[in-house]
Length: 261
Image 1: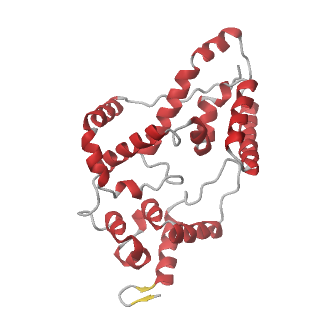
Image 2 (image 1 turned 90 degrees about the vertical axis):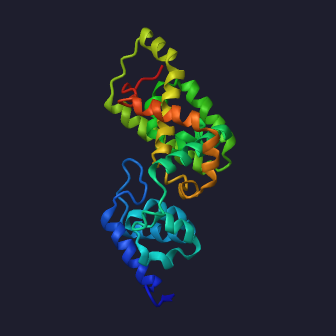
Image 3 (image 1 turned 135 degrees about the vertical axis):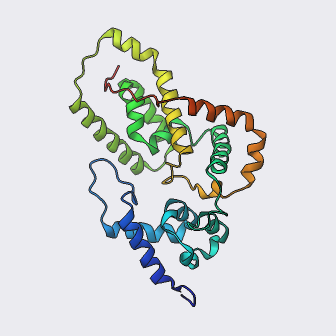
């Protein structure tokens, strides 16, 4: 299409995509040991994301978007103004965004699915292995995989995820020597629940920091003032959470052992 003020949408897309390709390396998610996505792969992803989920495109690449890109987001006028780089008066403050994400977090925790161990493992298999997977027995791992398979009718998807996880675990085994003792096994066995809580805490912090943008459309929360009303109802809980987070100087690092017990 042609816009008298800004030019054709094809020209706008080409210029915008070019800026993103030059300015960002993390356009397409890739797994360990996979080849770096080509520019063609990245362009296909950008085209697809813009056409199917424009609000998520705005969130992920807002630093490259200016007023002249407005015709590309005709169906997202309100969201566009919120994320427009040069419109600081309309953009929610960091505190407002934090409040809204915290309220959404409470919804997701109550629903249970998004922060279930299975779903968190899907999003971050490496972190799951560091905190939990490396300490599982073979029986525990097989039991978890049977439950996962029973819930996922897409058998091919299950096999691909299992293969990716196996390759990652094999790589870790090659790097680490296994020197388990009964005392060490008992120690890690006692800490399993604590490790699960640490893993969940890390995943919650990633969500609040906006690091789940491959899986969650933050624009639906960041630009939604309905969460401000919810935030008022949970102000005390939210303040307590952020005060506690700010008081922690460092985040608990994941265990560096790679042992099965």
